[in-house]
Image (cartoon, rainbow, N blue to C red; front, side):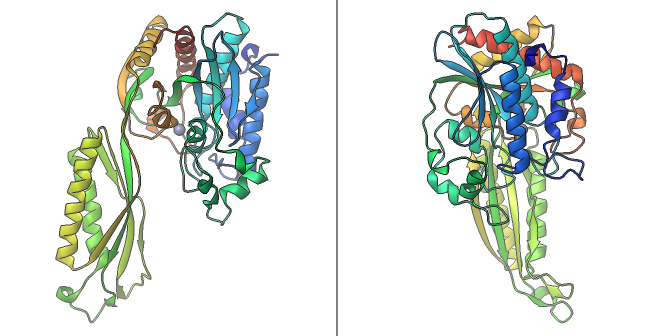
Length: 412
Ligand SMILES: [Zn+2]
């Protein structure tokens, strides 16, 4: 039976895919790049693409593709990522792949002639849960990966190169050029926030994906005896860091409509209960709707940290180790999503994505859009991540309609 004709629902497929996890004894889904669980998931998706008659293939980095050939090679791409965070949910990424296969399977079964081709891809990696890199799959599709990335290592010292070989992939082929011409990318994804559910709105149309930057911050003070050193003489790296953490939080509070900031990791070096902390390292994650605002907030935060450092007599080193610009979604594709939702009598909400996505990578190069469906309680990257069956089906219907319109060259 063809994938498109089966009585299995999106939920059934999501459940089956969620069984491909590294830790069966734990409740969440863990599927990191090039692990056995990841291989099992990509193989399952390959089989589903066969059932949907999409002539699947696997590319050099392990993305799995399925295709409906139109009269030209110009291709509208859909799909999402197959990897997860550690102890993540069953919907993040997986939903966009499964709905994409269903949509293309249904279109293929009608044997209609399309001016453009359609393709669905299970992108091999987005989250950065195993190696210090993100969106490996989408970057590879755009020719944005390099051989030096192969030497990056996971926490156990395994390199990308070794991990690829363990999956039967040849690491020397990663710098290939895509064989077909991608004209657009449309990603369907769970919202991972509360707006749609709280407004009882079934379909979100993403306007902009927030830009973001991450820092490693090192605060160097002076270790001292916790009993004998007077407060006035201390250079306490942890007290200074605490003010910086709170400063980041308060700055985010002031700009929450358009920006957000987080300290997610803080380490006290050689911390013991009877010592004044001499060194602290922490991270800062800063995101904003526009690059101008992000730059302004980053500059304000650096000033705040500097002032803190002066008052506590500690040294500060800030290393910005990653940054990505805000990416506006393509206006014509946004309009197509709205038209499609209207056809199915579904309300839409224009919203921003504060989370990074593969669409952020594609959006810098080709016309790109994102469709969101509600996430229950806004939970994501969590075992209780959930979207109800009706919302899942609504998203797939809208995706299918948008893909068909885009394949019929209804946007330029
Ligand atoms: Zn995702």
